[in-house]
Length: 150
Image 1 (spheres, rainbow, N blue to C red):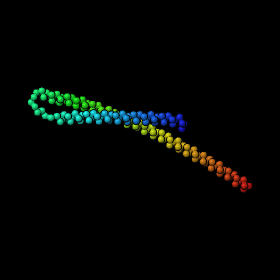
Image 2 (image 1 turned 90 degrees about the vertical axis):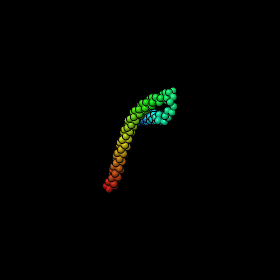
Image 3 (image 1 turned 135 degrees about the vertical axis):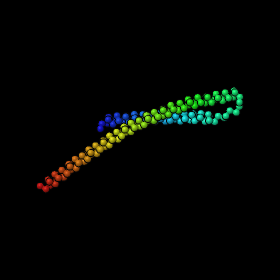
Image 4 (image 1 turned 90 degrees about the horizontal axis):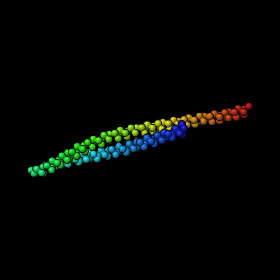
């Protein structure tokens, strides 16, 4: 195999490695954002669940509490929508990373197979060279012994 052919595969391995690393970083970022969105939803749910029951019959206090409940409810709806978006982004980032990882593995496997093939070809060539040398030595020894016997 030519050096140029291996060089282009080396570049492809580096490219696939960079893409895999970038998609892994993207996945880590998406997971962190999803965890943040989940924490926000949990906190809003906790706040809604721990609101004290109205103790006063005052209309202004009741309206203020209802306003707070509505605001928390709207924030919770928005947070759940954000959580779903974050989940979708995480899913897409995971799919991208798995795809990039498998492409990198395929290229690395190809490089390993080609390296093994080059190594095997070199071993065969070395065996042929050694056979040739052994045959030449045998011919010389045989010619020397045939010349002495005459």
